[in-house]
Image (cartoon, rainbow, N blue to C red; front, side, top):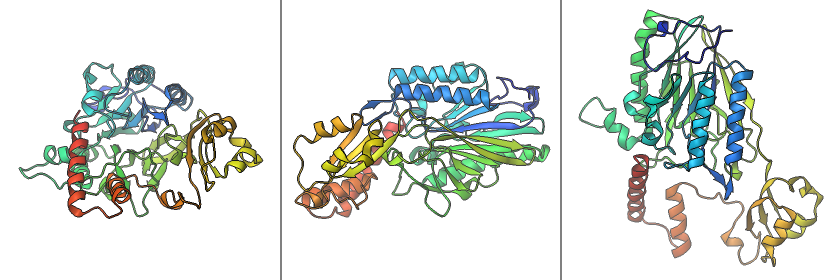
Length: 414
């Protein structure tokens, strides 16, 4: 099976490459979140080990291209070690295969894409709305594979940039991604007409649903605009595979064809039971042939333990979590004396320690059965209720929503 580090080109005819492979195998990854920590714990070494696992996977499984479906970094201005690790990852991976990455909602598209024209051949960072509909062309012995990277599209920006008229598109993720896919299909249509063997892959960073809502995590940043964050999977009709990023749990959205690879590491305790994976995506002459998860080794086990302090300190049931990163909830009615010290002596790697009584004077403030609000409008409504005892008014919520979305748009454009 032939391999070549310069197999892909952002623009141009695939015939110019002059090299083919027996079957196209892509490695679907996303949500690296370089620079992110876990409850104050520095995860840089764990992220460095993940990059090494990706390089090893590329070599071991004869991968032809690596896809990174957004959120390379955890914030718009990442720390220096994270930037250096990203440079190392690009250097090592692009020496083996093409690397195609898009910006996510955590990334600064401008910063991530800066100087991308200076990268070596085989590195394709697609961060600009202007690039939507322009494929990275790959090939195997059956013919071309058109890979369309769609960066995260903030509706407040993309609805103007993608509109064909003076009127902006509807203010929603569904509207801007639908328009992006129109551009993809417009480019793909003549390619398949001239060569029916052409296969197609789309990369996108969004909250995509098909019937049952997908599994979410606390570590995912809310992307709602106008109270709506979802995109129907039907938007992606007409392509062989859709490599999604944004949700941190690996999961299918629409059969094998539309999938999230999930984040490589557990970035919150809500991800404790998630198996972290990357996806080997095989394309044959007919399109998608197989998707094979490759499990990633995690730096340490994680656990959520909840019991009285006496049980937590003495029960053999918790022995197996002593070396884990743990979130501890102590359920005694009264807060035990010297709580933190006693918990840490038992669980030296405890990252979160909470007092959550099941009865007693504080129980009404920490009901274990109530879902913790994570969406911005839910958080502010909960805060207003906690402070005033009343419900947030429509005017207050509208003012907050306007301020929040203005701040979020400013951050995206940073």
